[in-house]
Length: 73
Ligand SMILES: [Zn+2]
Image (cartoon, rainbow, N blue to C red):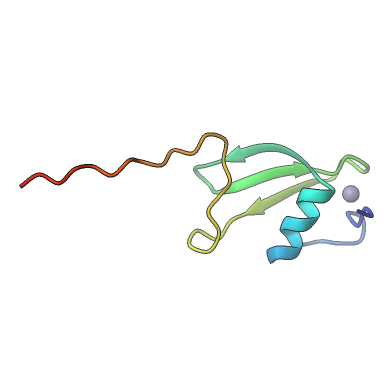
């Protein structure tokens, strides 16, 4: 994908995810803030993506899903 990091100030929604997937390099995932830091491999420009909490589940390393607990009566 062509580098648009010099032209674009902000990326949103599915567009942002596709751009990040194809072009940017993922640096780190902040599970507390629901953000992912990326950097452009060509220009070195940093990007920060955040995930709206309800809409997109964050794709984090090591899913911490809790198993359903049996109910106690
Ligand atoms: Zn770029």
